[in-house]
Length: 149
Image 1 (cartoon, rainbow, N blue to C red):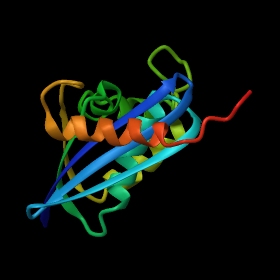
Image 2: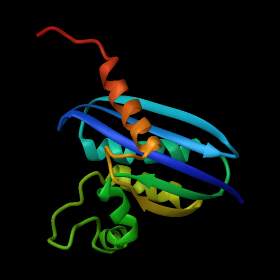
Image 3: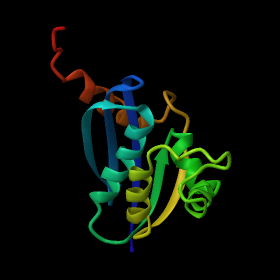
Image 4: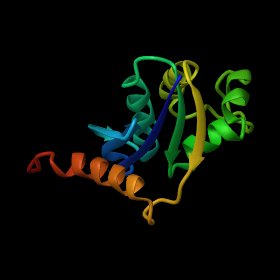
């Protein structure tokens, strides 16, 4: 299996508001950047979308080290939240509906194809690739036209 590193980040101008996501995929010394925009969304949805889009870009099962500054994304996998949510019919331990179940289900389906190590990085710090993903995500928001009221 190929070894790939993925860095992801999501951003939102207002929460909810205009959102962007960015990812950097690294394989065999090559880097591929991807990013996108959504008009009315949340920061957490953009964090999830960044991971989903990065995994969709991979065409075969791989060993992946996935880096994100989102505790929401990383802890869902590392702390067993996803298994608990599924067992509780997509409800939290306090019986509230899990937010973003559509994206979580899509992400679970994609993640099952790979051997993924989930790694939390500090956001807005000294990680070059996390900072690049932030720039990609916020850049997607910035390039949208301003619509007069």
